[in-house]
Image (cartoon, rainbow, N blue to C red; front, side):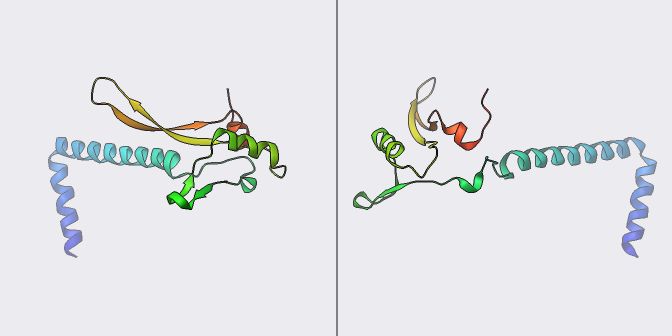
Length: 130
């Protein structure tokens, strides 16, 4: 019963100071609203999985180079062209790669990792292009 007594005392105290009560209610409303907005944004952008057309038919091809201890070695452009020409069981290739660029500007130069895709990548993934 102490909790109920404490709750009654809190409501009586807030009823005596109307300005404080309004401030508390507005602060709680803004906090709950901001939390809901941020969670919705994070859920929609970061937690929702990407949706691709015919997702169950997509495969990821990679090559390893055990001699230099690389598990996921990049394909060269001639290798990609050779795969396109010779592999007939795959209907389309959507190639992508990551490349490091040096960004120079007002501060110290930094290396920035960037994604690079081939021309058919968006068609293969089922993305809408404008």
